[in-house]
Image (cartoon, rainbow, N blue to C red; front, side, top):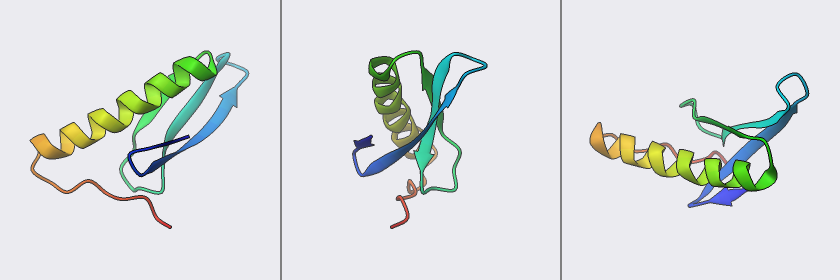
Length: 67
């Protein structure tokens, strides 16, 4: 998944019965999850938007994904 220049790293947890992801390529830890691909996609967009908003509130530059 890609959104606003960020990529998602996704794994499936059989124990939890859901997909677990985080924003890939940054040192900050930003996670999200969903029980379906659709839920996961929505959660990823919300996580990226929240990360960018939080950086703005804290007056710090958001990290960019490594190439």
